[in-house]
Image (cartoon, rainbow, N blue to C red; front, side, top):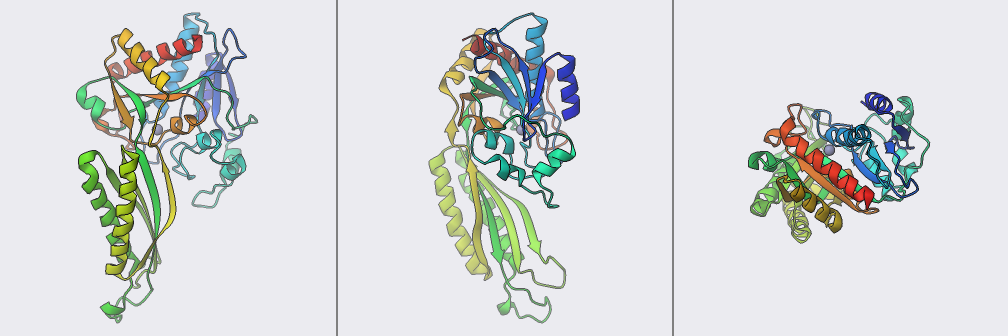
Length: 371
Ligand SMILES: [Zn+2]
């Protein structure tokens, strides 16, 4: 995908630079080329069972904006750049949104390169293995504004038959890795009273996490018990160690804090009932913020001027634009995905329902670039 994208960029006659974390930067010069660029960014990587549009649409929409301006012979005051952020999904190297995290100063480039996949391979070495490491600094540079177009990854726009979501901010998200500790023993002779089964503790915790989401569902809260690692995970032995990855989200950061507290209380109860130890081994989170008010207004005004139906909404997934928003004005445009199906190979879009969003992207980017 990286090679194909580079080929299309070259065919279109734009310059391409690659930074030290592999993010690809396409540039169309401005009339006043020293000014900070307007950036259109998203990602080409996918989840292991992901679809063809999550992230990819936003990068290709950016390239199409540049090509359209080129075809029209239209020059903007500021340069416009399109970025493909490396490792947005975190499918192989955690955390997700790694390159934009480094760009925003949230992690040192060296630390990012030292992230390892489950096989122990360093992220930096994996970049070298495919010739994806460039020489440009991956740290933030002056950016006038950043726009990310992305499929909604939810059912709202498709259900309402509205082509554009103007994303005003993001749900607040908490992630936790729970470590459940029990004691190995023989599954036969060990009396029930003497058992401390990490699998049972993890199962209780997974249910508690799910119940948390249902409790907050009326106010759009949600939760996932996403991944379980169990050791030794064998038929004849009670497991003594489990890691459970959980994720929960809420539109209101204050209510997310209530979910944090509810979960901790529930885990204490799970540990007592299952006679295991349950601790929070790792915590992370994102979201719970608003995108740049001027850019939101620009999108609203532009959509209105173009008679493009649009609704304001919050993003419920994480996106590179969340990190970029810490160092530059940023905003997102959502386009519908059919049935809200995403992180699934059946993910699909409708061309006619997508083009209005790309048109809005182009007009807003040009307005900003000429400001
Ligand atoms: Zn994405």
